[in-house]
Image (tube, rainbow, N blue to C red; front, side, top):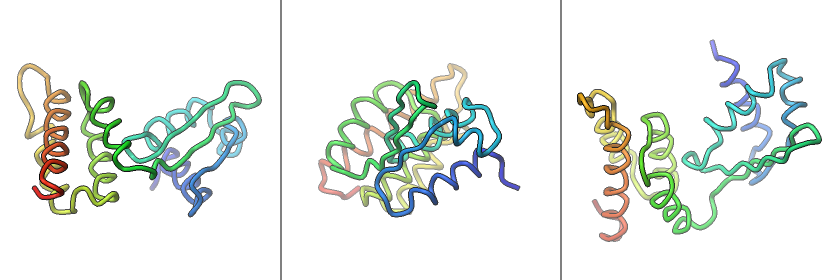
Length: 155
């Protein structure tokens, strides 16, 4: 059975459909699903983040108006932002998987490459006594992306 976060995500995905942007009210959405507005914030933060190819803009007041946009624009700009911001320090396993999915969607990696990286980035593969898994994960993805760009798409 799906949890409420999955249900809210699916609702937002269906609402967005083929559109690039949707505008919603956080409070209206929370009331519709009978959850606290913080639950909506959680879904937006974890399911509609930049690593997954989305941008969210939140405006205070008026029921917490939110705009969700697909960040499918310029891949070079997106990659630059990923390299300079998202992968600057650390990335956890869940967000690294979202990022790999987006790299496949943008034809930067193929599915086989993403599956190999997914195994490589797992906590089991990176387990060490110093708890630097998130830093190692960010460095690995950064190196793969940079090598891929420099070699014209070939690994």
